[in-house]
Amino acid sequence: MTAPSQVLAVIGQGYVGLPLAMRAVQQGFRVVGFDVANERVAELRAGRSYVGDVHDDELAAALAAGFLPTSDPADLVGFDVAIVSVPTPLHDGKPDLSAVEQAARTLGPHLRPGATVVLESTTYPGTTEELVGPILDAESGLRAGVDYHLGYSPERIDPGNQQYTLINTPKVVSGVNEASLAAVTAFYDRIVERTVPVATTAEAEMTKLLENTFRHVNIALVNEMAMFARQLGVDIWRVIDAASTKPFGFMKFTPGPGVGGHCLPVDPSYLSWRVEQHVGRKFEFVELANDINEAMPLHVFERISALLDGQRKPLAGSRVLLLGLAYKAGTSDWRESPTIPLAARLAAAHAEVVVCDPHVAPVTVASLPYPLVPFSADELAAADIVVVMVDHPSFVPETVAQSSSLVFDAKGVLRGLPFSGEVL
Ligand SMILES: NC(=O)c1ccc[n+]([C@@H]2O[C@H](COP(=O)([O-])OP(=O)(O)OC[C@H]3O[C@@H](n4cnc5c(N)ncnc54)[C@H](O)[C@@H]3O)[C@@H](O)[C@H]2O)c1
Image (cartoon, rainbow, N blue to C red):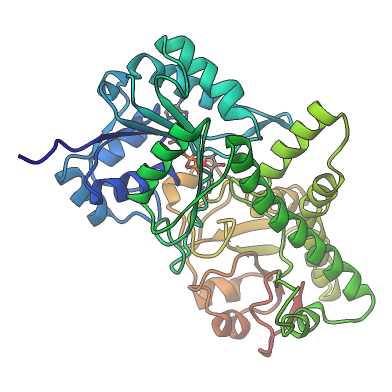
C-alpha cells in the first residue's frame, strides 16, 4: 500500500502562492489553496488563472488531481505543511503585517504536533520568531520548534521570467532550530532543485531584503546617472553597454521610468523601518533610492512636456499614448506601476491619456479612468506623443518607431532605430 500523500496548505493564492500550489500538486502533495478573497477562489475553481505564469491547462490538471481552492478555514484541517504567502504591504510608510497575523490565526487552530509552517511573505528580520511563532503557539497550545516546525523561506519568483522559475532558482531555507530547518529543507527539496540552508530565520528574512534593496539601489543609481549624463551631453546607454563589457565587479542595470510591483517599492522600506525602530538611525541608501525612483515619473512627465513644447503643442489637449501599464516586461502585474502616477499627472495637466497593455486584462483595470487601446499602427499614429513605459516584447520597436509622430522612450528599446523623439 502506498503512503497517503501529504497535505500542503498554501495560505494566499497570489503571484507567489498559486505557482507553488501548482508545483506541489505535480510533486504529489494534496494541496489546499486557501485565500480570503472569495472571487479569487471562485476563479480558481472555475479553472481560470489570474496569474500570468500559471496557465489554465496547468490549473485544470491540478484541479483534476485534487487541488482544492477554498476560503473555508475548515478545509485546513489535518495539514502536514503550511506555507504563508500573503501580502506584506506598507501602510503610511510602515510595514503592514495584518495579513500575516491573520494567516497565523487561521492556521493555528489546525496545527498538529509534527506539522511544519513556513512563512514566505517578504518581511523584516525577526517576523517569523517574534510575530508568527507566538500567534501559532497561542492559537494551537503547541510550541514552535518543540511540538511543530517553524521556518522562513523567501520567495524569489520573477514573474514572466522563462529562464529562472520556481523550480530552478535556488531557495534559501531556514528554521527556528535544527529540527525545524531539517523539516523545512525536506519539504522544499521536493519542490525545487536546490535548497540553500541558512542558520536563522532572521538571516533568511534579511537575505530577501538584501537582494531587493541591492536592485532598488542600483536602479536608482543608473536613474540618477541617466539624468546627469543627459545634462553632461553623454549617452548613458552607451556608457552602460561599455561598462557591461567588464567581466567582473560590474552588474548591468538600466534606467527606466521608475520602479513598480510588489517588491522594489515596498521591501527596502521594511528593512529601513526595522533599522530605524531598533538602531534609531535611518537606512540612508534606501531613503535615497526611494526618493530617486519615486521621482522618475515626474522626470518622464517633464521630458514629455518639453518634447511636445518643441513641436509647439501644449500638453493640455494632446493625446498621450502610454505603452505599458504593467510594472515590467512580460507581466500583467500593474501594482505600484510608475505608469499610474505618470498618467495621473498627465491627466491633471489636461492631456488626453490612453494606455496600451496587451498583458493586462481590461477587467482588472476597470477602475482606472483611462481607456485601454490595442497596440496598432493606427493608435500609435493617432497619438501626439507615444511613451514607452515597459519593454513588453509585443511592443515591436520598429512599429513604434515608424508609426509614431513623436516618442519618448523611457526603456531604451528604440535605440539604433530612426524615430522622432528622445530616449530617457
Ligand atoms: N509577486 C512577486 O513577484 C513576489 C516575489 C517574491 C516575494 N513576494 C512576496 O510574497 C508575498 C505575497 O505576494 P504576492 O505577489 O503573491 O501577493 P498577491 O496579492 O498576488 O497574493 C496574495 C493573496 O493573499 C490573499 N490573502 C490576503 N490575506 C490573506 C489571509 N489572511 N489569508 C489568506 N489569504 C490572504 C489575497 O487575497 C491574495 O490573493 C508578499 O510578501 C510579497 O512581497 C512577491
